[in-house]
Image 1 (cartoon, rainbow, N blue to C red):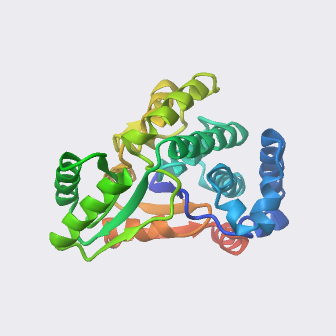
Image 2 (tube, one colour):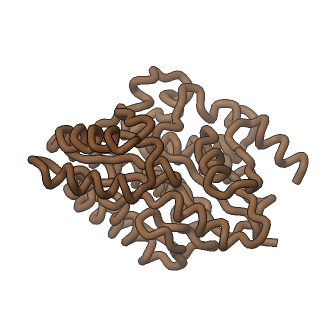
Length: 314
């Protein structure tokens, strides 16, 4: 029964030591990590396993590191999941990992693309500094309204960037506009407005230069049709062909991540008793899935212990 929905984490899930136990335990994981190192021409795994943390959290390292970790897990567990996966989705850069799982991208091509994506995003953030903030406790409609009001009230723009859960939305844009929107949202009853440590206004119009550069990289990339649908961040709709995947990966840089809708789409595609399986570092996405679809079964596969337990039970 194809009731598995695969989740792939995004930036922020990285941590020093990530994936080392997988490489030690599974030759398939070692092969993925070695191939990514060779393809990028940098000792990425050394940064992943030894740090320092400030180097790992740099966008051009964190993005390929998270993808490599997800791809390594997938290389080990995918034979046991063959024919069981209904669809996959990834949060922001995790969309690339989802396409690796679906066979649209090879792991090395995915790592190359997200490293370039990270470089372009960092450059766009340097050229036009921006910021992001998480808004807790208000529905997305109120956040959209506050962003429109704040953008109209002065210089700069702010938009809803990550529609994560029914009452959790991340806003993104010019620092002054984000601050204005934050004050409006606090006055409207937001429980918290939390400034995020980011190097730019991701998933906002300020990423247009990065989107242009990434479009060129994607045009030259080799993509194949996915073996199962991947839910696009920008539309929350299933993607079933390579050219749509190429267009959606470019679109997501300046579009909001429609994560709540994406999770609901996954649940529909996975049928009456969906099981959400998060592959890669952390468990943020399975936590979100349980809040979006109460009672749903979840599983995290990031560590060697978790993968070994899954293989033993499968």
